[in-house]
Image 1 (spheres, rainbow, N blue to C red):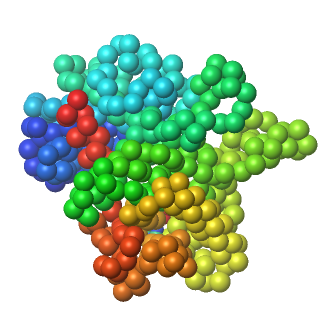
Image 2: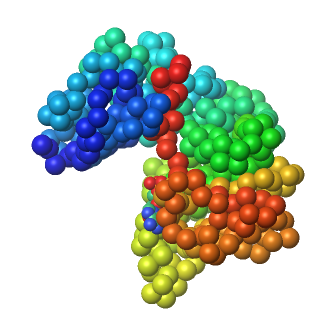
Length: 388
Ligand code: AMP
């Protein structure tokens, strides 16, 4: 076994499963999952593609198939391959069966997501080649936000320029926001059409959304996944004038600015660590930079919560999800502190550590349900791929 691959096989039958692939620039995450039950047969990640004995995504997927064979997993009976595709632009709003034309369009959209779509295209090409005859489905990270109201999707820039270059707010993490918002309605035992909610996806990347009746009405990420909340290594919102200033007055080139804002900002830029557990540890040890990083993170988060409360008018639920949201009780308490007058209360007795199933952390009689709901993008992609 190559040391590039880390996998975990739970040994159930592969028949009836969907293979979910998430291709990054130097990694390939995979999961073989039963769309109905959510049972995971095997999952794992191939890392450092291109740097080591795994030269490209083709070799990576071959490695995965070798692992399957070694574990006695036979892919006969595979229902579909579900590909996570980051940018669907204005071309795709729902899961789409991939043919040559669809693949060409995903490739064309690479100009909007230069770091992500090319890797997604590569993953699709290899999977089509190695699994001919199996339905290949693209599930778009932007899909859930396709219908954002124009007022939320439009940048106030020259309309002709925006139209010509497709410059608008697209939103990302849509599969997670959609999955979690549906789980919330299920948990509350109410039709999704009746639920007004805010979903806070706080992972290494972070985004917030406002969802009215199952439809996204606003979200914090924009043209790219850089806008919005403070993230592990991304700045989130900044004055766009800062970019001009970095270039004109400081002389940084576009690639240096890209690196600064995408990889050397956020928590990492402010305190040197992007892993939230490490930041928490530093705060507990009295580190001032970590405290400031946390304060900026919380400040931005509260600003979005406030905006979305006003946009939604009536609010039924606020939900935390993803690595930080599911695990860090402190962020949940601090994000919602002092909002009692709006019916938002976090009960410290209920707001304990990690949540592995949907959990309510607000008192039963509080006006707004505050929830922690584990996200599961792989399962959502598998279900979408099986259903289309
Ligand atoms: P994700 O992108 O959803 O995988 O989330 C990754 C983020 O979740 C990283 O910043 C981790 O530090 C954070 N995370 C994972 N486990 C914990 C934990 N137990 N407490 C706090 N943060 C955590």
